[in-house]
Image (cartoon, rainbow, N blue to C red; front, side, top):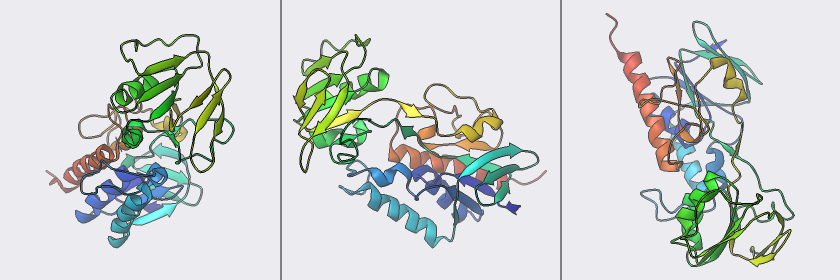
Length: 293
């Protein structure tokens, strides 16, 4: 068993931020990540709302964060977490080895449900977006489609209503349960499903089971897939949005923290994820360094 002061599961902005704060305080963290450091940030084409950068790709920002972690000699293990158990320490079983620590930070993010239609892969990051607050401003005065039937689709419409020229809501249900009649630039297409995305170098049109619509971009709001089945042994409290945490990012289980897109909150952005990682790490630092009475 390999022991560390803190184990961080997930190397997105939240996990990397937490690791930086811990290491600079003289605490030895381990990061476990099954994919590339940066998480979904690597798939964001352009970021324009992160302070200090007018515009850059998510891939470049992720690399900068990773480089800072690497410079601090923080160990990152590329492996998939299989199970987590609690005894005296938190035991994390992975596809490679087992690790243990008295503190655990969960920061694996969320996995959006993908759009499934012809040419969906072709226009990934080039016409298809899964984050309206990230990419909405790229479609100022342009025509866009929002795909979804729930609250996330409604929130996307509210956000885009003062940015986009025209918004087509592609709703698979017979009716849309949220009131959007006061948004004059929104056209609702009920009982509709996208079948094809059309365009050469960029997205030009979408084809549904009923219409052929000219658009510049598509915002997919279909919800998220479960991304943390191995946390079930911990019995963490959660709601429909994610894991419930307190103001220190601690879950209902003592010394288990969660941050980033996997928690229940109102804003899912890089800047909130990094701050949450810092908050979680700082609370752990206080606990570790508190004098024993």
